[in-house]
Length: 127
Image 1 (spheres, helix red, strand yellow):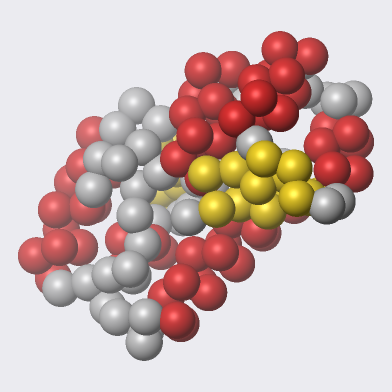
Image 2: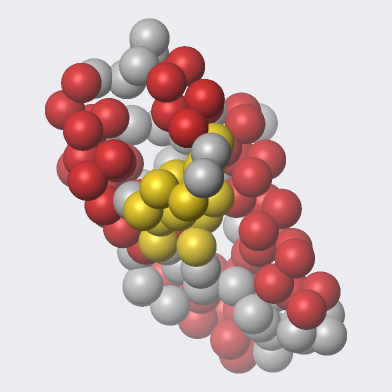
């Protein structure tokens, strides 16, 4: 999936992100008018490389993109077997954490809801 980030948001992030991270983001993106278009998988890989957590805005954007894809594909739900396989992979992942008693991915920010959405994918291509 392609993430659409406003160039204004990229500029604002210079205050909280390293210059190296911003340079890498700009290098992998394509400018389209007032937006930077970036493949999500590449963006998530940069977050891992630079140890960067998502901002609240980025979390909301990621959730919106995932849900839009789910709606576009007709609301498919993962089978019980698919869910358990995904859950097992996430439980063993070094990027998993617990927040308020819920499993959370520190890369995409989801609270494991994506495990139930058949159209969703792991940002690190683990499932």
